[in-house]
Image (cartoon, rainbow, N blue to C red; front, side, top):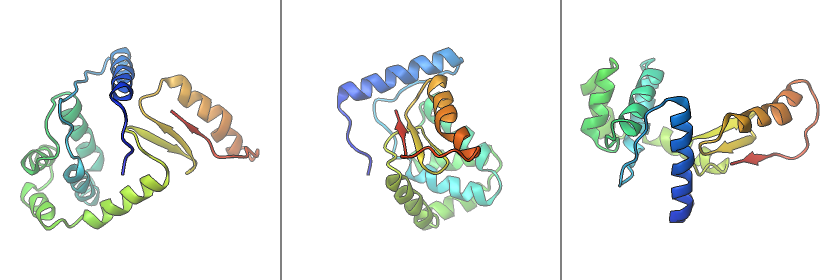
Length: 163
């Protein structure tokens, strides 16, 4: 389960994300009520099996962040899937049957075990974690300090987290 953040932490995170999106020319919007992304995550597993994960993931992100759609609503998730070429009725049935619930449960447990409590989160070399919307320099620092030396066989010592 994700840790609770204070209203000030949430506001600061939104400000960083908004600034990063503006700098990158990416439109972004926030909702008053966050969606429960569980159905979208289960639908993503369906899309993965159909070879459409990237297309579905991209469409869901746009629907949530730009169009402010509720990706916790089955009808919306099914419509988004159909837009990218998934069989809408098969997707709806999979969601109703909760066919991908165990797979998503496993992924959530894995994320919790890695200490992931923010979106987005990036894991490098299965041990270096960058959480939240971060500037390019943070990723560059992780690559230069941890990832590239490991690839060259240099020892780095302790695991590290950023963000």
